[in-house]
Amino acid sequence: MAQIRTVDLTKTFPDAAGGVTALDALSLTVEDGEFFALLGPSGCGKTTLLRTLAGLETPTSGAVHIGTADVTHTPPGKRGVAMVFQDYALFPHMTVTENIAYPLRVRGVPKARQREAVLAAASELGLTGTETTLGLLDRRPGALSGGQQQRVALARATAADPTVFLFDEPLSNLDARLRLEARTFLKRLQRELATTTVFVTHDQAEALALADRIAVMQSGRIRQLGTPREVYRRPANIFVASFIGSTPMNLLEGTVRDGRVLVADSEIALPHGTAERVAERAEVVLGARPEYFRVSADPLEGAFRGTVAVAENLGSSLLLTLDVAGTAVQVVVGEDDEPEPGATLWALPRQDRTLLYADGELVG
Ligand code: ATP
Image (cartoon, rainbow, N blue to C red; front, top):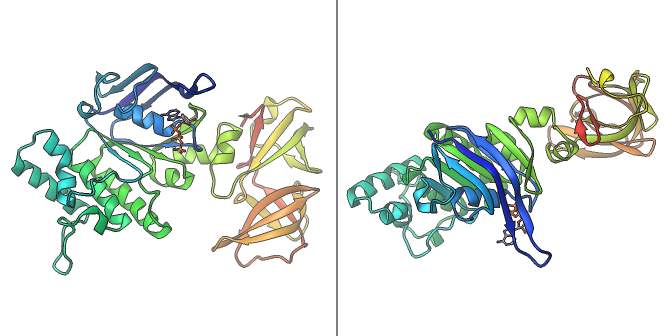
């Protein structure tokens, strides 16, 4: 069992102003075998949390449990964790083989067993040669591409046979195409090994694609914890709503009036099940993802009426920015539906996909 549990984890760093709270009484449980992403903007405390799990930072207060043990004061080498860093942290003077074997060597694992583990991990990660290509095992990191270095770092982590993997943005140094490839590869590897994994990223698309569950962090706290589908479909607050989604969600201020929301001089139906939960004249925010609109050149009842200000090509679709009485509303339409600039369109948000926020929190 390698469940990870933090209890009221707090980490304060001293600074000129008296202290930065990087983690603020943070409690969370990562289940055995889970692929768990820590997601959030720069400075929200992701790396500090990961380093605290690894034992590279000592918490100011609170506890870390791995499996059944309280490891809060256990040194990094004795926690059964393997960490892969953003820059891979390979030893430049060692060959690939020596790099992969390093954690086993310091643990005093016998030579023959080291060799077996290195070969198994290297072959799993495609570092050994085939009939037509030479393997990479005798090269030094300086003679490897970014993607190859990343595989060596992963091989070093898997050869150590840890109970927990900790990944700190391991894909961030790869170019866009390689990054997608490495992402799929990482997911397959984690599935095969079924090792509990905590993964830090500031890239929401990466977290959505890889994780079983995501913790979205802000200022040392978790603002939402859920499956990718949950955080995408039902962001618990405006912070998460604005952070998740490759085209940002429309977050439109409005007022509740007669079972509808008055937004930018349009009257939009309240999301399903929210009518009983908001007061008449309440100031609210309507959340609607650009993907969930019906768009028409003919009038639609209960829709936004706007003029096309900008059309951006997303490849297989177009992102239109409509000017709705001075408010920008973004909608996605098919690639063949490019309207003339300035054309008038009606955009009807799908009622079962719109969300209502009051005081920054999800009403429904
Ligand atoms: P990024 O995505 O930029 O790496 P992050 O979410 O990983 O950010 P952390 O690196 O955990 O954020 O930092 C959280 C906060 O703690 C920040 O305000 C940071 O400046 C501060 N911090 C982190 N490490 C230290 C340190 N060693 N000394 C002082 N302050 C630190």
